[in-house]
Amino acid sequence: MKQTDWPFFEPHHRDLEERLAAWASEQLHADHGNDVDQTCKHLVHQLGQAGWLHHAVAQQGRGIDTRAICLIRETLAFHNGLADFAFAMQGLGSGAISLDGTPEQQQRYLPRVAAGEAIAAFALSEPQAGSDVAAMQCSARLDGEHYVLDGEKTWISNGGIADFYVLFARTGEAPGARGITAFIVDADTPGLQVAERIEVIAPHPLARLRFDNCRVPIGQRLGEPGQGFKLAMRTLDVFRCSVAAAALGFGRRALHEGLQRAQSRAMFGGLLADFQLTQAKLAQMALTLDSAALLTYRAAWQRDQGRPVTKEAAMAKLAATEGAQQVIDAALQLHGGLGVVSGQMVERLYREIRSLRIYEGASEVQQLIIGRELLKGN
Ligand SMILES: Cc1cc2nc3c(=O)[nH]c(=O)nc-3n(C[C@H](O)[C@H](O)[C@H](O)COP(=O)(O)OP(=O)(O)OC[C@H]3O[C@@H](n4cnc5c(N)ncnc54)[C@H](O)[C@@H]3O)c2cc1C
Image (spheres, helix red, strand yellow):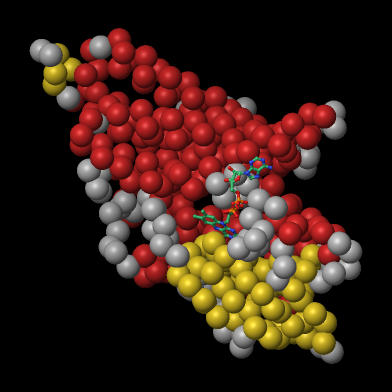
């Protein structure tokens, strides 16, 4: 039975997954050049032209279809990690506009995001405020018809190539999480500069941003003053399920590679796949992935029903990212020395999966969310 035959899906999801899988096999190659900025820009354009980015944004009264986003991320991650990244960031970077933008803001940004003509970014984390987001210090002070931004954001994916940033800053209506507001900041706004480009183990555009007396028109405020933290959490609720789906895509690719290697590697007068130890490893990989997939698509389906999904999304992200890490490690082990050779698919997956256990809430944060929800009776 195909995954899209599960009762969480509707016929259009099956159709979407089949069309995308065919397109990705033909158009996407895991091997991209060293210029990660150019590759990402190209991928955003390519995904926009082919119509896939329309699923990353809410448009024309149509809400976000979480199951579609998850299927797309799983499929793209299977084929090419950077393509998944490009798709995900268009969604995450514009998600708060989809959820809470005025009609004018939505009209100004979302069609360009969906067409791959504007690159989006989500600027929440700061050097001193990662897991503890509410400790953020970047400030926005009202001055006539403008807000004046001062401070820093770091670990910002698409930092340096984005056309705009959805940014969260302290406006001080109340202490902590209740004094934060969201803004849309165009990348060419004076006072915004890319202070540092950050290189990571699975290369993608990433930067630390600096805001010095950066004046943003009042019309660029997103949602109500003081409601930014809630908006950030609502955005993350959608995309947390999709991080789980991306992990599934990486994990499924690793299982695919592991199966191929086990069935082709000759040893001890037979094949690696002949040994029960190998079969047990493959069985555990498949079990881990299918368990994570059930949690992921339960969360996505539940969100599409309009039901609260905080606990379920956290469970999905925790199970899928931690599980995929184990599956990829097992696939690499099946490859022996070949597995650690730079550029091998399992070696790439090994680097690619690591940060998913950290961003959009580290695994420990997901555990806390689940525990807290259980104690609330949810
Ligand atoms: C590749 C990458 C891309 C990213 N992209 C973006 C982006 O586009 N936009 C954005 O805003 N941010 C982004 N981030 C930032 C990311 O969300 C943060 O790194 C993450 O929230 C963790 O924050 P931190 O790095 O400051 O770690 P810290 O907050 O210092 O946490 C360190 C570790 O402490 C542990 N921990 C945390 N809380 C607890 C707890 N309560 N109890 C016990 N242990 C705990 C966890 O293991 C965690 O990994 C990105 C990060 C990475 C690595």
